[in-house]
Length: 242
Image (tube, rainbow, N blue to C red; front, side, top):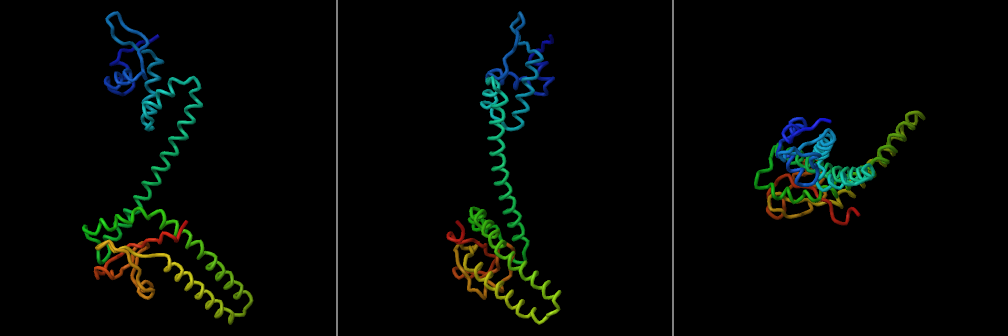
């Protein structure tokens, strides 16, 4: 049976001697034998255990979790439980990172507009970060409401085209415009805006809202509090979503 000193074991596993010594102190990797001079000796089994520890550390398992796994007789069952918990944590963290990345892209786009957001406006923009989840849920619900209207109009247009009764397109278009108008009005009723300069929340009149230049998340408005015109950030009323 092959035996390795601490230095040899560390070299083969691709870690430092200090790492091997640290795992020994933590009770994760004890030497299988000792020399007459008191030096630690490790076996092939110890090498495999070290590689396992390093692999689990690369997956961000804590030393306490690894120790519990190594001490458990039913290691497979414990590993499955740990993996499920770890996967859930990573998925949550990934979603949070995706939300932050999406907000950064939106912020960068705002900085590239013809009237860019200045650095002193960033604290105001950051106030909207916590509303991301609510806003995205709101947008999803609004698009789902719009989809049947669009599909109905397309279906009716195809039906009119096949029947040859083109005069029916006029009332179809009128009904579609009424539906779109109601959808826009309903959307307007549920949103407000935050001025990135003075951080005040306000609601423009419908005409201003409808004709203002905008991005998916901002609209170029004049704040009634500081009277400055800039791209204000759209937020959703607390009562708009459950």
